Image (cartoon, rainbow, N blue to C red; front, top):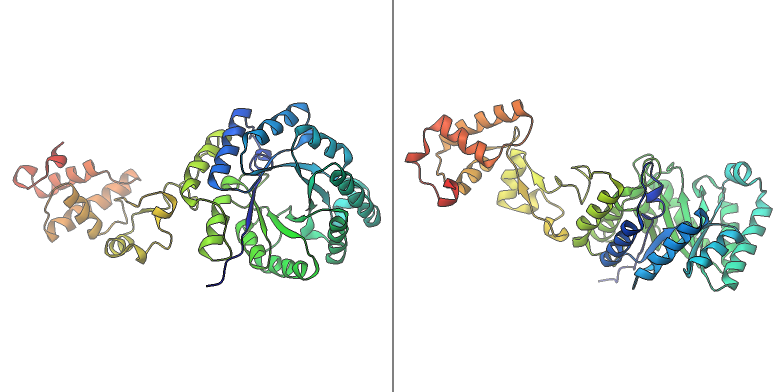
Length: 388
């Protein structure tokens, strides 16, 4: 069996994630998130933006000091002032970002392509001379001319950058185009390639996996897909996708993802949607009669991802779409030996109740339905647990 490529996971929850509207982490929350990320196996953690000021610089330093294995990274603009601010935080790794699309070069910086290349070379050399490990970030790379993009990245590499981050800043690309772009970059560039995707079209995870398939070595993600506007590629989705699709291997411990998501959700004051892939409460919960019947026979019939892989358990609930197999099992667990005819009677009543109250049916409610439709429990064999 071929050895799978090692993919580095770069998490930006503390930087891009905190830029989500209304999100503001305390220092204690940042440290808790950083440590949880490290325990989960994340390789690189963007700890913040030093240019925000003295408090941010101090907090980045505290976060970096709290880590034992993961690399703390400061996100900076491609300026000497930002490099100096990063140095004051004590980090040894920086992402120096600069717009590479014509519209952003002109509108944001007022620079020509030639002057931009001069700035890239000067600032990266300045950072390297001061002992920093440098990654170049190409903001709005998805709208850049490929010829200029390659020139800019080669310029960065010559100045000492070891990684290039391609940012789909506006989330405008699809996986097919991403695959083409990274295939071409891989053919012309020697340094490590990272993809940073936004989710405006709901394609951030798919785009990240496409970049990895085409040769990207690093994936930039945020827990729960937190981030500006529609957010970023979700750590939990990308890490699981890399493993299950055999695109590579990471150090992420999948069984720790649920706890990590809960920590970030609490700190961000953003509830995790019930159906959120991997970490939502309902993703291993089943109601549909056809599905439950299959699962009771063999979990592989309707679970491509085992809940045990994530340290979770399967749950079968009763509701409008349940079938006789689920009702029969629930009654048996309650110590009730119902006949096939009785199961059907209870099933009809349960579906009607579920539609009326618009939620799942509890075990106690199911027992009450049985009692109401099939006679008293006094004449039925039941376990002591069912009577409790």
